[in-house]
Amino acid sequence: GQQVMQIPQYQHVQEGEDFTTYCNSSTTLSNIQWYKQRPGGHPVFLIQLVKSGEVKKQKRLTFQFGEAKKNSSLHITATQTTDVGTYFCAETKGRDDKIIFGKGTRLHILP
Amino acid sequence: DSGVTQTPKHLITATGQRVTLRCSPRSGDLSVYWYQQSLDQGLQFLIQYYNGEERAKGNILERFSAQQFPDLHSELNLSSLELGDSALYFCASSVEGKNEQFFGPGTRLTVL
Image (cartoon, rainbow over all chains, first blue to last red):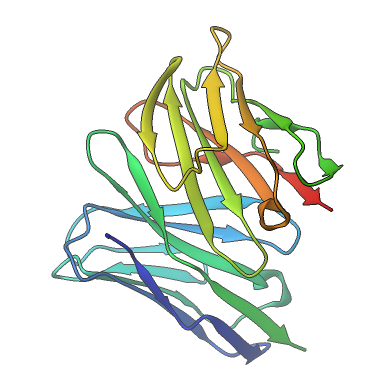
């Protein structure tokens, strides 16, 4: 069935280092949403990308949608302890708004 | 605070039992979604309701059912509970035409 694959599953980085998570699909994505879930918390919407090659920035976070709309990435520059959590990508597809989440990338920051 | 409320926060029950989880969406949101999140697992989409009608179905077991009431709150019913049903259950709501979902704090279900 349709699915979005996220890599890596886990990532440990030193505070101040950069971090990137990738979301890949074998089929063309209609759109991609990114969510962040802090430990013990609930997912919080970060951004949506819709256009081929789209790039959006939120402070230290940069989101990209591939030219072929089959992949997306989230890059965090100079990570901080507040960036700890799991980052999920998701696609909302179809007239019925069915949403498929990736398994997420868990980011751990080493002080 | 997302504006989505869920009750109860925690639920501990035994195998074979039945429970009901409740969700109130953000004011004005007509769509409600239910998700299951097990330990170290991603978010498994269960079901979506829009203005009282079922709109999309995901990996929802036959032992599970849901409904959305005229006041737009929703309930997820889990029956014949098994140990493997222990998980966090999230509800989310969204505005018509927008993919951004607002998640509630979740209900942690423990089946002993």
